[in-house]
Each structure stands twice: as structure tokens, then as C-alpha cells.
Length: 159
Image (cartoon, rainbow, N blue to C red):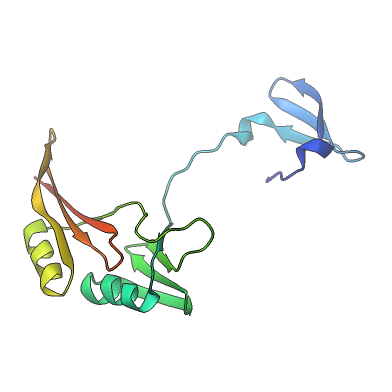
């Protein structure tokens, strides 16, 4: 059950064990407090603010090889990164160009992948290098830049 309410029009009547009896004016709701906990589990979509959708599609699709899912309009496109949607959008609201979080893509041969993407036209920001020695693998990281200056991370877990 999903409960959406205006807190000013709702007041708790009674809390018994883990159940709130809540009523807004004339309707009584029983809300199980145990179900009000939330846990995030899977990222489904990441938004990237870009200057030019066509240029960004060219980079993420043509150079990096992400599948173009669909283009909603001239200011909005969606790509697929193995089940995670990458939304490319021109600035909306507080979105700013080149002020995005870094996307890290898992690759199987980081040196070859980095070289291939640069040969296709990506700008290298940092060559792949060992970032950390973990108990069961070495973590290697390298960076590219997209056309707007956003960092795109490549990572490999070498075993």
C-alpha cells in the first residue's frame, strides 16, 4: 500500500504496537509503521546534462558503443548501459553542463578499451593505472572526457 498525504490535514490518532491509526478529517486510515521503511536497491537511470544532444549521442553511441534506446525530442535522448538508462538532456532546472557525477563503465581489458575509444575520437583524460589492490583483485581506473568535459571512467577488476 502506498500512502500519500498532506501532513497538515492528517493527524495521528493512536499508535498501538507498530500501527498508527491516522485520520484526515473524516476518513480513517490504518498505516503499518513497519512498512514505512524504505531501501534503495538498483540504479535504473542516470541523467547527464549536456550542451548538444546530437554531439553527445555521437560520443556515447558511436564512440563508446552504448545502444540508443530512443530520442524523446531534440533535447532528450536515452541510451542503454547494460540495463541502466543514461538520460542525455540539455540543461533543465538546476542541471549544469560538465557538472555531472562520473560514470564508471566496467570493461574487461582497460588498456585496449581506452586506446580503442581514443582512436574513435574520445579525449583521454588519464591513462589506465592501478588504483587499488583489493584482497581478490586489482582495481584499474582510466578516464576519458565527453564533448562537454564530463569525466567518463573506465574500470577493470583484474584477477
